Every structure is written in structure tokens, then in C-alpha cells.
Length: 243
Image (cartoon, rainbow, N blue to C red; front, side):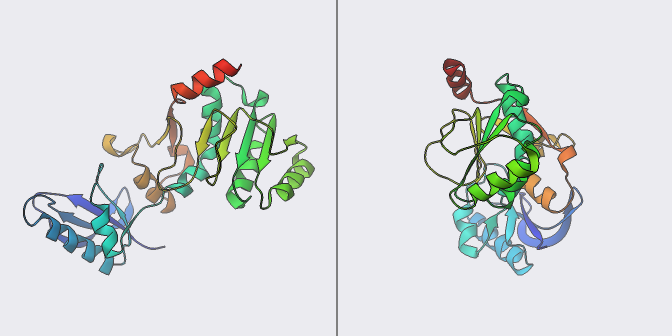
């Protein structure tokens, strides 16, 4: 597993990268002062130091606006897609509860371009918990639906059917469902729901890239992650209007 980098803003920082730990996770940490005439130079020095130390994926301060500079050096943000997909079933159950729906009376649609391993894992976990599933994936969707019917005996509806909630694994057309969680891209859209780790410092609890790094590094498990927030009011209103 590659080491994670951490960029920290400090008025005493000069960009030197040194080993450190973040909630038990080994990181390569560089402190830099981004302000003033030499601010960009210090950031570049920090970025080069992180890259030389093997830390291509970097955690940055909240509201960081200098990604174009770091990307020029070959650095990238920590991806959050894996964390969000690994927790998509608790997210789905929270979304249904936010609509006032029992999962045992609800239909959840799994939509994407392909029925990969993450969609299949979500389907297996949802089968004992929901009334019906919709499997909508041009590549592998029919095969997954057949296997689910055979293994779990749960009604698997065709792609054209509408669910109470959609879990979208890849971008596509407009979702059929008013309530949809987009589980892809650099900033997954959870429709007002948030993953949070209450045991972390207050400013870090909802830092999704940090949670993703701790998850990947084995320092954070599903039991330590809670779901807060509720569906966007627009989605709740649309659902209520429909019912």
C-alpha cells in the first residue's frame, strides 16, 4: 500500500516532508505557509518533497484551492469512491428512513454501466433487507439479476421499473427515482447524507478524504462510521408529492 501524504498549513512551515502519523495511519507530512510572496514556492517545495517520498495521494486542509499547482507536480487527492461504495448499504437504509420508509416495504434500484463487484456486494447485502431490487446495468446486469433470484429468492425487477431510491455506481442519464445517491467521482453526491467518524477531532469527523485514507489503511471500520444528515428537502418533497 502506498504511503499517504499530508499537507499542513503552518506559518512556520517551509515545505520539508517528514514521516508522521495521523490517527495511527503512517503519513508523509509537509508543513508549508501558503501566504506571502514565497507562498507558492513553499507549496511547490512541499509537493516535490511528498512526491519524492512516494506520497502521490495527498490529504489537504479544508477548502484547499491550490490543486492545479499540486496536480502539475503529479499529486492527486485521496479518492473517496471506495469508502462511499463500501458503506452504500447503510447509506441506503438511512435514506429510506429519512423518507419514512421501512426497507422491508421499499424497492432499491442499483444503476450503472456495469454490474461490477461493488454493485454485486451491495445487492447481496440488500437482498435480505429490502422488498425488491432493480438491477440496471447493460454490462452484466442480467447475469447478476438471475444469480440473485436463484440465491436469495428476492424479486429482481427489470431496469425500467422505478424504485424508492437509486444507488448509482456510474454516471448515466437522469435517474428515474427522485431520491438517488451518486456513488462515483471525486465528490460523490449523497443527497444530504454524510459519513462521519465521531471519534475523530471535531474538524476531521466529516473530512471524507481523511476518512477514506483511514478506511483504506485499516484504521477505521464500519462500526466507527456513522451517517448523519437527511435527504435533501427537494427530494423529500418530490417523494411526498408522488405518494
